[in-house]
Every structure is written in structure tokens, then in C-alpha cells.
Length: 270
Image (cartoon, rainbow, N blue to C red; front, side, top):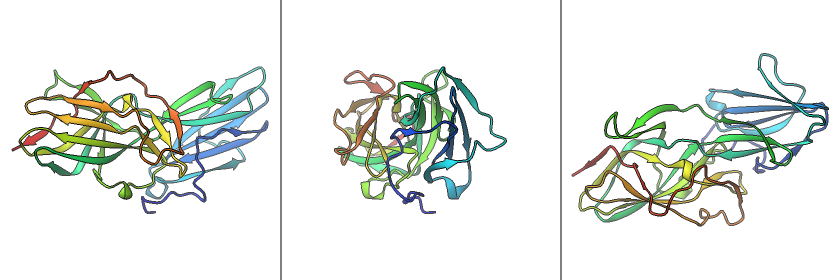
């Protein structure tokens, strides 16, 4: 299946609440992650399953199933009387994500370029109209990586790859990844060549658009000559096209105005 289509009959946003009757079991598949929820009179059962099949990596579908598949372990949540609804919400990861470009990108001196970079989200699973969170699970298991000039300086991050697209029209529709518009300013007098970029995703809120895609607030990164850190600016406006979308999740952490982040550690300048 092409990565620019959603594997679903409709593009209904998947973060809206779903009500279940006693005994009903519901399955939601969001990209590689499948979530099973079953309601009983005084408890809820919750199970998750992850696939690595290429044809299922972009799926988005949901519906009633007879039961949680055999072989899947599930968690039980007990109540005097079980709530009637569940809700899924996307949340960005709890550490920065280091994205490696498939091909190094070059930004000439005193130029600014916008890239659209996506990162996988976690799914917050809650009951009672979102008031009771049961579990948070990532849709994709990313590997750990250290981002910094040495083993003494830097921070622990997650690692993934990116196409570093610079056109919004080229961004594929993937229900399990949030897209961040990243405006990079090269304020130096030398060519800026980037093969890795660290995105401070814990500082970013998540928006959901009517087509079922996820976006974050746009950010700006300013590279100054001779400075290992970049100035970070997070827009207080939603991403372009999100005017009719939903504000789904706040940022995990608050970024002070004018914060400096380690965004460009592997810079080749000439």
C-alpha cells in the first residue's frame, strides 16, 4: 500500500469517544498498533498488539470484534459499575527524537528552509470521557540513541529516519505519526549540511485535522555561527490548515521563551 493513503474506508478522526454496551469488544488499528477494549458490567479489559507487516503499517480501521484474540495478554480494570465509553488520544514521545535524513540536506548561508518531519506518537487510552487514563502505549518501538558531541555531553533520545520533505503537499497521510513543520534559519556565513536533527517533541502539543492526520505546533530553529546549541521558538499558533481541527493534547513539558536546544550535533560546515 502506498504511504500517501490511509488504509480505511473513511477518514473519521479516531480520537472521538466510543461507547460500548456490556459484553462488547472493540478493536482499533492505528498504523502498526492494534488496541482491543472489552467492557463488562464491573470491569474493562485492555490488550494491545503490534505488527511489522508492511501492508499494515498505514492502516486506520476500527469496529466490533467477538473477543480479544487468544494469545494476547490483557489488563483488567475493576469498577463498581464500569464506565460506558473509551477514548484514544495521541501524545508525543517523552524524549527528543533524532531523525536521520536519508540524504544530507544543505542550507546556504543566511537562508531559511521549512521541513515537514513526522514522528510516531503514543496512544493514551482512557475511560469516562477521558477523565480516567488506563494506559499509554507507543505505536512504534524506536531504538535509543545518544545525541551529543561526546559521551559526557548530550542526552538520551529516540532514533528514526526522515525524508526531510520541504513541501506540505508531499507529506504522506499516516494516522500514527504527527507532522512537525520545522523552519531552520542558517544565520552563519557558511554552508549548513545536516544529516541528523533532534526534534524536541516533549515541548510540542498535538492537533488533529479533519482528515484524520496529526500535526504539532510549528517550530523554528536558529543556527548561529560557532554555537553548538540552537535557539528554539515554538509557535503559539496551530499548524496551517488546523483551523477546523482539534486541539488534542498539550505538551509534556513547558519550554521557556528563547530556550536553547541541542538540535544540530553532526554539522558539517564549509
